[in-house]
Length: 210
Length: 235
Image (cartoon, rainbow over all chains, first blue to last red; front, side, top):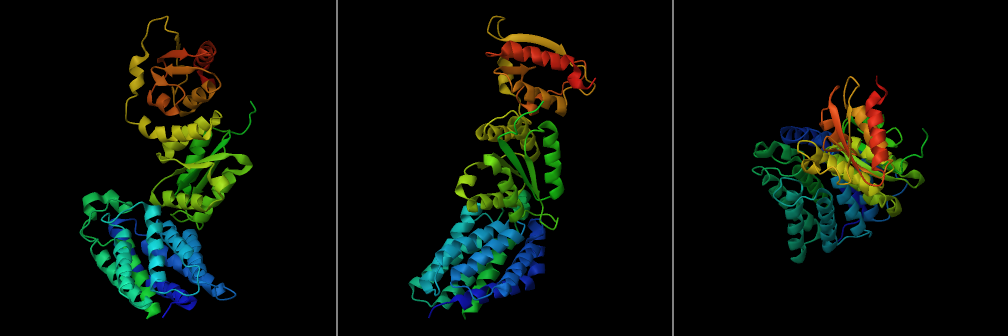
């Protein structure tokens, strides 16, 4: 079983849907330790992505083309740090997925490229209370699942589960990167909004594959 | 006075359109010959950084073969600027540097340095250096007392203009001295640095001790004395 362009389009639409549903939650999380714009920014970004998808004359030729559209649109419309971070993630992922079909290892390559993009852009490592704390365990879980012979859908489900665990694990952390780092010790006790949105987006990927 | 536009332009990237425009205004007052481009806020005017706005500003700044230094305020301004450079044509990106510098102080220092016709590396360095100019004493000022025949020319001049050595005259001094092949210190501060001059806090009536060195030391000294005694055109 493989994932195709229709899956990628569905993933993007589901991402927009879940971001819209969790917009207020992301705003609240970011208000506690940041500038409160994460939910609004991502909502605006994914709304613009869906509008561009709707306006396409034909279905994109490969998965990378879908992800490239997401990347450039998020960079242009998000406004906060999530724009260049997710934008770079999707851009790197697009470069790794210039194909019409993804098998389990192709899914792993997508996630690894996205993580590399986020790390390259944000220069964060794990334990700094950022989206890297969700992306890293997600990618590791995807590798383990693919190596164990899991289907692409199972790989994505494992990644989403691990992202959830990783996001929850940011609660006690003290932020040392991003806007939350200005709060120092006071950032502890809150879930990182970027880790939460990562979890939502990876869950959308898994649901589109299910 | 007519002059060629400075070869290095500045792009000021802020979350706030008003902040970027204000910084352009402030730096522009001191360096009218430098292309300064504000890239602040989202395209709808809200707070945030817009990839398209920053990209457009960098492209405009680097037209005609100019180089550009980008100054940024908080987090996503840096990330957006970096993303823009990553995706720009390589020959353009090679002429652009992002300064790890305080936004306002870096913009002012870089603008004045660029106004003197400095190259990309020098303009970048002056922006970065602006971060350490505030709050820390200038260590080299202690060693300025030497014997009268050490090659240093000395003069004194009394500040006449009512507001003293404030931003505008400090910029006049720094710009004027860029034309001379000479190292100039005023009360121990590096006279090529607007920020160091302003930090002196020299008020009307204060006697400035001027020291100049280098091939054009005499010309630089005389020009500076004349400017100070002329009240920088403000009296």
